[in-house]
Amino acid sequence: VTADYVRGLEVVLASGEVIRTGRRTIKGVAGFDLTGLFVGSEGTLGVVTEVTARLVPAPAPPQTMVATFSSMERAVQGVLALRAEPHLPSTLELMDRALLEVLQSYADFGYPDDCAALLLIQSDRQGGSSEDVRRFAALLAEAGADEIVVADSRQEADALMEGRRAGQVAVTARGPHLMEDMCVPVPRLGDMIKAGYAVADRLGLEVTMSGHAGDGNLHPTVFIPEGPDGPGRAREAVGELMAAALALGGTITGEHGVGTFKRDWLPTELGQSEMDRQRQLRSFFDPHGILNPGRVH
Amino acid sequence: VTADYVRGLEVVLASGEVIRTGRRTIKGVAGFDLTGLFVGSEGTLGVVTEVTARLVPAPAPPQTMVATFSSMERAVQGVLALRAEPHLPSTLELMDRALLEVLQSYADFGYPDDCAALLLIQSDRQGGSSEDVRRFAALLAEAGADEIVVADSRQEADALMEGRRAGQVAVTARGPHLMEDMCVPVPRLGDMIKAGYAVADRLGLEVTMSGHAGDGNLHPTVFIPEGPDGPGRAREAVGELMAAALALGGTITGEHGVGTFKRDWLPTELGQSEMDRQRQLRSFFDPHGILNPGRVH
Image (cartoon, each protein chain N blue to C red):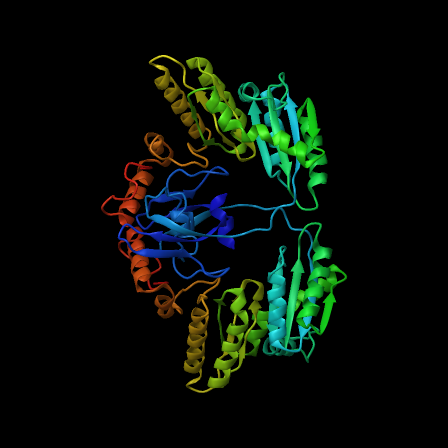
């Protein structure tokens, strides 16, 4: 995750004082390291004005493959099988039928019109990519994949990945929506997806359950139906999705944060005691409440 | 560094409340993450009772090599050359003449008796180790290494590494000492070593300048001379070593912490304003000062 690459920060505190967190050296353990506290705090503890990041060598050009499945259960089986590998895929994306239809009606990305779910997989392991692809293909076949296509060229790989990149644009073109950001433990991925479809059925909404399956991080998308009660029903669906994620041991936000929209759900995730402590800690850094008021807590 | 692998903690706070920090999922950004704040806090913010660690696949068996140099300057050149590689050695240890003598008089590890400095190097990169060793050898030869020996077998590699593992025992057998833990930016490694020898000369002390050179993390060891002023002179030397590390943009402790011994030097590293903030933050978590009193700040 991004935080692992943040070595230090320059932060302007509420008092106006400019501080540096983190280490100037590769190793260092003198005093408290505030870096991790500021990362992801959404500007509520200070204003980050500089980030020192750890660099890693550019990965090898990835091998790219696609697997299609006639049921979501099988696709999830495929995800779990790949997650059990010692060398994980560098990309492991899941698209469900609903998202594939949204994508294909935006532009023809060449995705099949008859599969229930599709996995986009990459390995960028130096010296091991081709070997990984062969092993991944065998595991996906065992999980029940109907078709497994490995890109022969960079161009073919780019074409396969293009739909994923177009997701946000295609969804926006389809209409008003709420795009969510739940993350559950990977073994509960199937349960999360089922919960999403159950909510969609019960409330009569169009919902896609897709995302970064390898991390258990889904971006369920709820399209806002027409009519005056549309936004309310979509919001109700999102609330149920968040409740489902929490019940499965997950979080209401895997990577995008709490902001204003999820404030009301945060106490359910953190618990009242932790909410109180975090608010007090926030007051410690910002006694007059001038930093990003109304966000997070 | 170790903190990168800590995903979450169970901590008993000063109030007796038991909290969990970190995430239950691979990704998660709901609220402040206190994990990094507790890691390395030496028990001053709470008592850690459980650690959730990220696991990585066991590395490939390493390739091991040794390079000897007729001057410390050349050995440092070798370190800098290897640090500029895209794929870094997994081990890059420096031993100076003084440490080699301490080791060889403890037991015969087969280290040469005529080199000024020695580098112990490993690469554990899957699929790339042999290639790395060839490239490392070329770079070390260019830096002026006299002899470069690559282990042919696991047994030979173990033999080469044995002296490094015996360092603490051999130093303790030699006599009373203060073993230090400075870390400087790698490009300042040569300056730090020179500063150490200058301190040793001026105060007439036996000092070794060796350690995890690839991280810029040295464990300078000052032997405490006999006589009533011995401990004071050794402590003075350590103070000068810490001042040198700070002047070079480094830290007084790369990996072992502040504890009681380095308390007096911490304000020089952090500055008074950061010391005050850290003490207040400590009071926030431990208002009655019951957690590890007398340590760190």
